Length: 272
Image 1: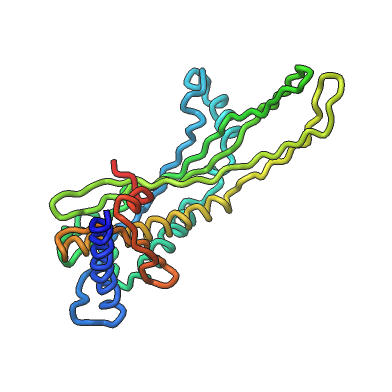
Image 2: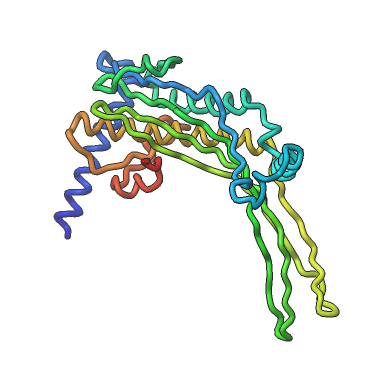
């Protein structure tokens, strides 16, 4: 067991040396700092209200009835400004990416993206989605005397979903990352009388500001995970393989921690 552990420690130390030297050569402006990152950013936002997916009889309603139902279940999607939503994501994505200090080249036409090789790291954000849905919830309990209490309610969720295509040279792979924010419910039983519970309720609602903050957070997450993918790919290109995953700290522009690859890969993009 000791020799295996020693081998892992030596491997991680070696991997860190290669990944760190990649970062430092750009920081110090060395002649070998020739790689570039090519990016195509999203230009549109797909709106999805998944609360309507399984709504019985929705397709049989006339247009005015459908509009009424949609309005009752939508409080964020129809209020966010897509241009602002995209700007929040794109600005944070590019700023975070810049913390690696590798030159970033924006490519408007996806067909003009270069192939990934020793000088190119390529990502195309192919789809950007804003999703809203209502989650049915219930709070209930039984008293010692057999009294049953039940309170039904809905919690609103807002999610941001991103599909990215990474060019790995020989092939391009699509990955997914999603995150969401949700309303919170707080209920306190104030009294029990005549087989009835009196409940004091409070909801922490979400709004368009939460949606814009979600877009910013997703920009940060996507860029950070892409940087970590770049570091892993660079070490693989240089050494031929790697057993390490590198957590990148965007605030300091440096590697924060090195862990076994299987551990770090659990928290990165979902491969489709």
